Image (tube, rainbow, N blue to C red; front, side, top):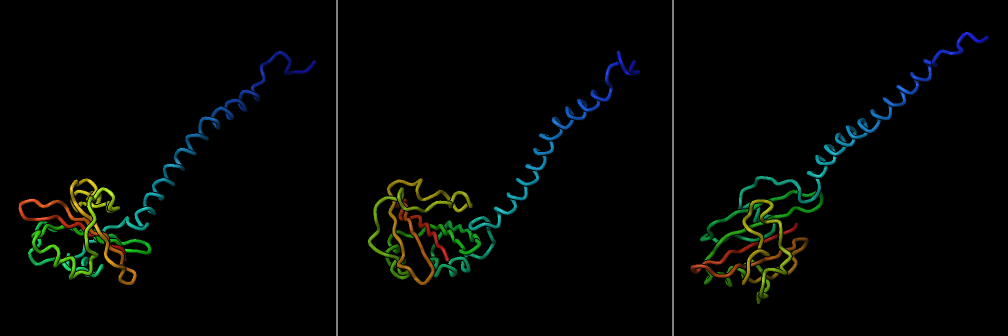
Length: 173
């Protein structure tokens, strides 16, 4: 007669316990790895185009896209976003409506302005703290500047308020 007959097999229980532990630990390990990978991916996204805001003075930001800021501009806000290939400059300011046409002409911005800002394609201003997006304003106008080398510019003008208009400039270089 075999000496183990009639006794439970202890060895089989150990394998079942190890297999059960592995089945529980495997998903937990995969979840932990995915969290670590996600953190690395988020850090990498900050280095993609349009993801890293750099503090630069307003004149330097405007010069990067070859525009000037009127001397009498008020409520000026801006963002300079360094990208992988292109840098983006977002400018927003108020200026007297009477001086708008001369300003646009001096900066080689195409006239006449087209009605509406909803289709201007300019966005991201609110995301970078440069005021409301032009597309959120009704009754404004928009245009583009003739290409100047590698610099592309879009311009939106808000409706007049108390003799002033808000100007949004979105430039890529």
